Structure formats: C-alpha cells, structure tokens
Image 1 (cartoon, helix red, strand yellow):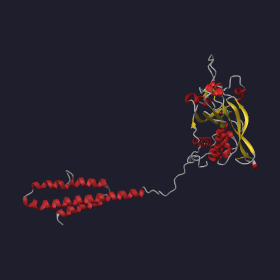
Image 2 (cartoon, protein in one colour):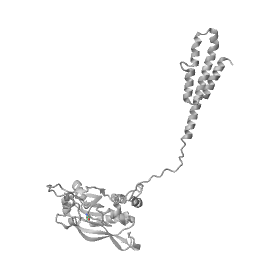
Image 3 (cartoon, protein in one colour):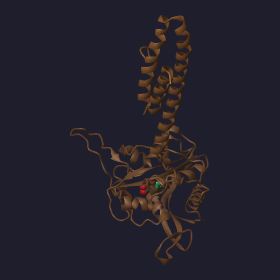
Image 4 (cartoon, helix red, strand yellow):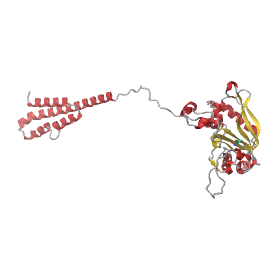
Length: 357
Ligand code: DAH
C-alpha cells in the first residue's frame, strides 16, 4: 500500500468510527479545515517539482473527494441513528384513554332561567334586567305600594344602611322583580313585551324560603291586551316548560300593582306521594298576576287611557323544584358539590323550546 492509500484508509477508518456528529465535525476540521492535514498537503503541491505534482495532485484530489463523500455519508447515517433513537425514546401510545377531568355542572336555577327565556323568546318577549339594590320608589311607591301599605311590612325587606344625618329613605334589596316593569317602561314606553328574570331578597328562611331567591317577571303592554291573553300565554308557557298540556286556574286575589289580580294555580296530582304536573285534580299555586294598575303605568310615564296590559311574577326556584323533583330550596344555595353533581346539568344540554328540556 503506498502512502496515499495508507492515508486514505486511515481517514476512512476514523470517519467510520466517529461516535457522534461532534466527533465527526472534529474530524472534518482535522482533514479539510484550513489547517487540516489534507488542506496542508494541497498547499505543499505548489512547492513540488512538476513530475511529483503530476502524481501527487490527482491522488490528493481523489483523497479529498473520498474523504468529503465519506464525511457526508457518515453525517447522514448519524442523523438517521439519532432520529431513530429519539423516535424510540419519545414513543407515545395515542390510543390510551385520556386522563379523566371532572367537569362543573350548570346550576338548576341557571338551566331553568335559560329554559324560561327560550320559551318566552319564542312568544316574542325580550329579556330585561334591573338592579338588585333598588330605591324604595321603584320597589314600592311606583308599584302603588305607599309607605303605610301592609305589603311593605309583609315583604320582610332588607334595608341598606345610611350614614347618620343622611335622611334620604334607605335603598332596599329588591323584594321582587316587579320594579323592572317601571324601569323598562320608563326607558322604552309602550307597547312592550318583556320578561325580567333575576335575584330577589327577603328576610325569610325555612324549607321553602331562602333570603335570596329568583323570580321572573312578565309584562305585556299594548292597546287591547286582556286577561284572556294572559291566560293563553301562561298556559302555553307551562305546557312548553313541563312538556305536557297543563291547565291553569285563576283565583281572584289582590296585589297593589294589578287590578284585577289573580293567583294562578297549575293542575297537578299527588298520587304516590310525589307531585306530577299536568295530570290529576289538584292545584298548585305558582304565580301572581293581573292587569297592570293604571297608577303603575302612570308612574312609569305610560298613558293609561291609551295602553293596558298584564303582568305576572313567578318563582324560578319553585318551578325548578317542581320540574326536576328537588325537595329542599335551601340546598340550592349551599354549594354542596355532591348536590350540584346530582342536580346540575351538562353544559351541552342547551334548552330549546322544541327539545322538550
Ligand atoms: N311581585 C309579586 C311578589 O313578589 C308577584 C307578582 C304578582 C308580580 C302579581 C306581578 C303581578 O307582576 O302582576 O309577590
């Protein structure tokens, strides 16, 4: 083996033995870098005699080519091996079942509010809202409940605190959603068709009363709206909500803000100890209603000689208990996760009028 062959086989052996890409790069610099062995030999060609150069030149060029090719081949092989190793190390079984994540649930009050809204929206009612801290004027006076009226005392009102020396009447936590009637008519006039769901407050606590609960108010004002429209709207609502034909019974009653006034019962049966709505011969009271009192229209800036209509107020928690068989109102607001998982709804159970939920 002459000197060139020896040199070639030395370099090829070293390249073949390179363990990784860093070692290979060191070899490339040692062979072909500025001061690499082969580069230095190339530079020596200039000082050779013509005959020697004729032998050494081609041999050196061939050596350079072979070393370059070997370096590239080895680099590719090391790259493949590195990728193989990585693929082996980072193996992932995408068919494994995902880790279980506990999802929250939609509270029955939220679900039922959505259901009620969907049904009334279908009948052309918009949704209105009002503040939960109200002036006594909106909560009482504008609704024809003057200061001496027994209804004020009956409502177990929460009053806010006033600084000493501040003689204005205190704000109240609204005791019902009825003040939204006034606020809405003040802002939008007549005709109008709204529901107003929301929180209300009364100082009361037992199995069917909590200091905070939910009502939905209804209001429809136009030129010739009557009690007959009210009865149709409520029967349509209850039939859609309970998913079965529900008869209603109107009992004469009294509210300061309606004239005439009626309490409305829905048909039910108590057979087997549980209540079933839409069958049987019993009645269950679910709401108060009536024709809006002329004084209420006046207080809201609507002319009672031109406009008339009905209003109603219904407990959302109560109709949620009825539909979903929930026995105790207090548990609604305990935030007990076991209760929420049992009575809560999946976020995907979106209420729609025709889905029957
Ligand atoms: N605001 C009454 C309450 O909370 C319920 C009510 C009765 C609302 C008759 C009305 C109505 O709009 O017309 O007890």
